[in-house]
Image 1: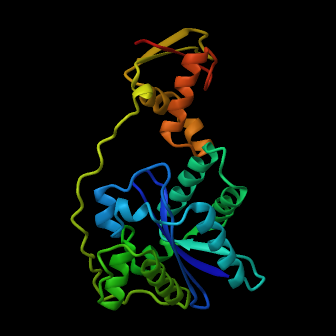
Image 2: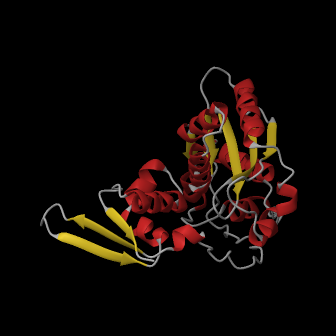
Image 3: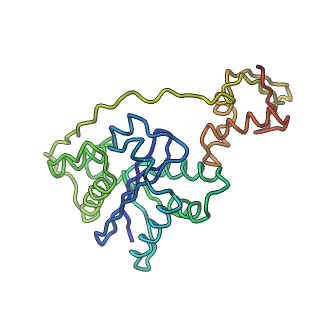
Length: 272
């Protein structure tokens, strides 16, 4: 059973809306209240969701189990695969899971639901790129080229999931863009600049890292202007493997500097 899926998220990657369409045409939508990252003006323009509206959304402990139950109702016994366009949706799901893993009060239903979603997600953008013979074509440009109808500039996840379903269903049926057809670029919304990164006060401390290089056995030291830069420079593998946000890893760097414990094979010391 294919479930066509689209997610909307904050600039920090926290899911705020889920849109899905099943093979049988049934649709699902749920908004989710962000608990860890803000809805910025940029996201408000892109999704039509304001920060005030997001505060009234249901929590993940309500929305995620409802989504899982809806998906299971569509299952025909052949298993579930979530088709998305590109890797962004999977990244959003991983970042959201990392946020909730840090919250000791998160119900298991949220963690298990997000983990199950991630494990069954499949990027089908390559199918669309091949069918349109355009390696960089976006979902909206592909739909505009196919239907000569532009999707709403406001990103509605159900509308995008429907467009994805229509495109993939045609392509799986053998459709490709005719040789004489021209790819049309969809209009991009005029977005405000990205939110300026604001580093929490405790993580904005200058920090020195110390370690012994494994090959040369030399003592190594490096000074970083804040814990976030130390984390992203020295702990990238931990960020990727544990699907943690850079601030979560930076907090571990800060804790290591406070407690004197090692983290990522390094000792950290706060300078000021």
